[in-house]
Length: 539
Image 1 (tube, rainbow, N blue to C red):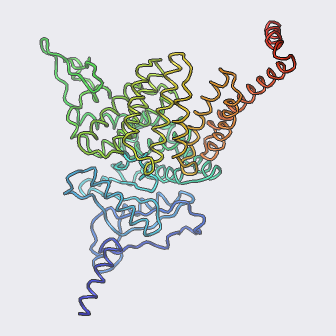
Image 2 (image 1 turned 180 degrees about the horizontal axis):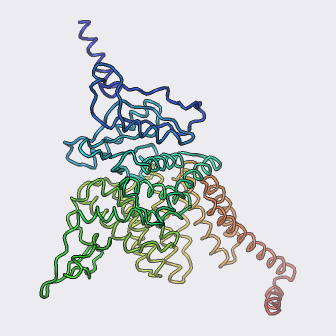
Image 3 (image 1 turned 90 degrees about the vertical axis):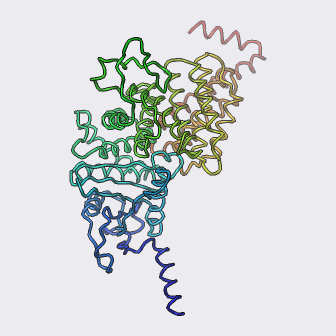
């Protein structure tokens, strides 16, 4: 009987520790750092299932793990620990998206038990030496990044120097996402920007990291994406440039082959509802453009998790480039990407959160494109998509995503009114902005919170100045001040300067209205208008 209970205890112990393997986790800090110095502790799992020595309790070695640990060891304020365990998605799962999500969350849960908040894992192909690397962290499990969770970073030569640079970009991006407070966040942003700046010089020179593989380009894109969320969108254009060959290759593998025009055969139509001018015999021998390839995707079951994550990152960068008015890519391209992803999620794999996120990005692309072209109908269509997305989200469970969608809806209403040259309906948009602020935690999402507060302040300023409303201008001044503080906490210096400028304008308008009121009080409310006219004529 004692042997039975002993066996039961061993079973429970194996369940708690995660596997039958030996976890060589180290001391959890390393590199001479104290626990207070470590901002991000990461775990690196095995990349090969070979565990001959582990079966007898001995130490095992993994060349890829050594390479990853060595590359990441130079990143300040981080510490790595080894996880002597091999992970892989369940090959028998009916839904590959759910399989990779469960695998990512399982790896992160094991990392949490070892006091790590980020984990690197994957598999090396023993036939050609190629490496597929995954990264998961607490930040990436947010609903804001749910579509990017299956991201795979594939490297052709794991020992190449560009692979080390890509790994450093990924870990530094995690440090930016995890940092709190203005000084700490600004320091991490500066470190990531320094690496990105060196890589950007190469990208602008035509390098696409072909020797290292697509993983290096995707890592660069992820770094640009994280910096874009702090207000620095200067790397969006180069990120789109370096990712585009790999994105085009992914889409070409799932797109229908172009058919040469014969007689009066109609050209196929795509996701955007437009006739494809490129479906002719002359263009069959030429490389199709990315938008045309997207138009030719008809079997959405071919869009696997890897392609979905890469397209989500690429589409997000296009959206940010539209926000910054970089003219790096057209809005139609972003609309096509997000429309395809939304349909893919709707047809097979999607959770409500995934679908809401894709609809939100589709709406954002429509609104930004409509603003650029002064097309109020397209902006209104985007607002309709935002309303659809809001109905799919639980505000308590997914606060940041709900706040982002609500902010987008209010901005769409403001943009539509601006294009039509009518008064902004503040009675409609102010409650929406306030609801977004209520569910978004300023400490965890300072940049999102600051954007919402800045947009609210702009509405107060515009209508307050139009109606000469002192109360609204006072709200604008206070809102700009709060936005300024939030942007500083987020390390977004450019946005903070814009908020400071808004605060100054509010002060000036309030001063002018105060002077006008003083003149009217002094003249009994009769001479103020004449005095103002005289002053205007003299000027």
